[in-house]
Length: 159
Image (cartoon, rainbow, N blue to C red; front, top):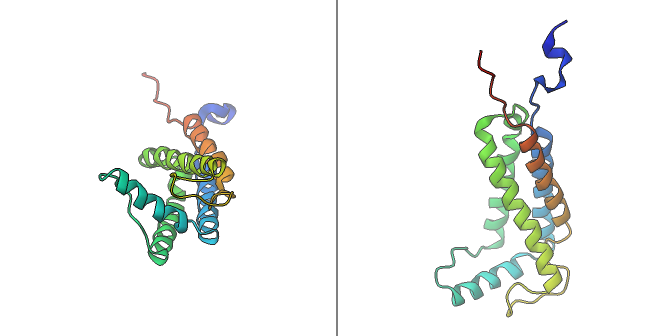
C-alpha cells in the first residue's frame, strides 16, 4: 500500500474553495453597493476627510469608472482561482492581503450601519450602502484566513 494514500495529512490541500467563495462574496458586495448608492456616501466622506486631513489618500469616483474598475478587479481575482486550487505559494501573500481588506470592508459597512454615518457631516438612513452583503465578506474572509493557515506548505523533513 502506498503510504501517501493512507495518510490524509500527506497532501496539504488548497485554499481554492475559500478563495472562490470570497471572490463571489466580493462580486455580490459590488452589486450591493451599486444598487444601494454607495458612492453617495463614499465620495462625500472622502471629500470631508480631505478637508480635515490634507494627506488623505483616497480618490473620489464617477459611477462608471468605479463600477468598471471593480468589475475588472473581480475578473482578475476570479482568474487567479486555479492558482488557489494549486495552493500556489506566490498567491498566498495576495490571498492574505485580499482577505484582510475584505474583512475590514465588511467590518466598516457594519460599523457605519450601527453609527448611521461615516463622518459627522455624512449621515445616511440605516443600513449603510453595501451592508447587506457585508456578512458574506466577513464569513468568507475569515474562511480564507483559516484555509490559508490550514494549507501552509510543509517543508520536507531532512533525510
